Amino acid sequence: MLSAWLLPEHIADVLPAQARRVEELRRALLDRARGYGFELVIPPLLEHLESLLSGTGRELDLRTFKLVDQLSGRMLGLRADTTPQAARIDAHLLNREGVTRLCYCGPVLHTRAGGGESSREPLQFGAEIFGHAGLEADLEVVELALDCLQAARTGPLVIDLADARVLRGVLAGVPLDGVQLQDIVQALSEKDAPALRALTRQVPVEARDGLLALLRLYGGDEVLAAARQALPQRPLVREALDQLQWLAGQLRAAYPGLNIGYDLSDMSGYAYYSGLRFAVYGGGCSDALARGGRYDEVGAIFGRNRPAVGFSLLDLKALAEVAGPLPLAAAIRAPWGEDPALRAAVRRLRESGETVLALAPGEALEAQAYTCDRELVCVAGLWVLRALPPAN
Image 1 (cartoon, rainbow, N blue to C red):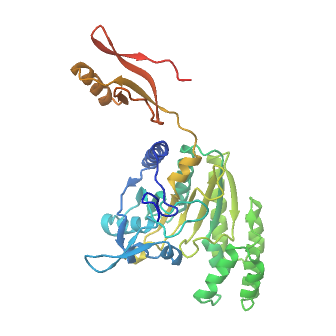
Image 2 (cartoon, one colour):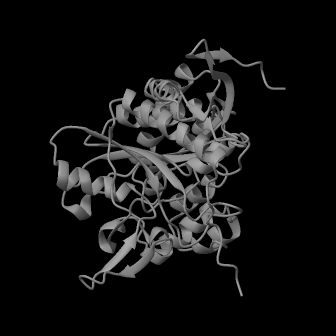
Image 3 (cartoon, one colour):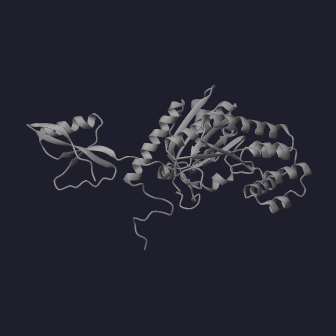
């Protein structure tokens, strides 16, 4: 028989030391987003399934927990991503004419883990801009993502840039059904040249050569120059490459230590993104710390198809593990007692923002998040603070 205290696979408690790191990181990221003018929203964890899965593709459907509402009989879902909810809020609750900047931070649930030891209950932070189709919004979102990761002190960062319009431009005018397109996207994502050749036997030569060229188009700045030579000379392809080059120039000027790369065959989330796509790596993690891009169709199902661009930090709990170490919080040690003057002194200190640990008789300090650098002592009938020697 399984022990009652065991949790499901890839579900874990967050214990005090890590919880403090996660919470302080959450506050820092929300403050950073507020500095850009983003407004905080808190969508529900549970809502109607068709709303959660609107325009998100098959992958999110497979990762979404589903259940029947005992009140209405309708299918409900536990959110696996917060972006569709932000789009719903923008479209129907705020309904603004101008640009809307929204941010959020809360748990999402996945039916399966993303890989390795990843959690099925990530704590997702994200930010979205609705109503602005220009490159200015794309740049703002990327800069906020980088600033958030710098605030987390993850060390040197690497950003990979791509654009969904490159593949759409290469395939412009080529008649493909949904299954064929999905198979081509998968072959590109896996960089499977033999499969791609087999899948494109009936594709016109220019488009087939462009698809095979995409497999080689990853690396540094040389990628864009090579892409201009190897890909079909079509307006959508040229526009995407020009905008990637502009964006990289802006990022290089603002973040001199940032390593910028390109992978034009990276098709992750192809059905979801409509333009720029990016992933940010750092902290020694093989998985991306943040992903984002432009997804202008996300609000269509809600009857308000506005331009949209955003990003999410995939799991603050995982990010806290690779973030720079936090110093222990300073605390005041106080005796427990019934003396009204002592109790009043403790209350005043706490009201002023101090952490006061009132230790009961015989209690030893075991909390891992605090270090007592002062103590409250009685001197000539008055309760005063006294410095403690540094702990060894």
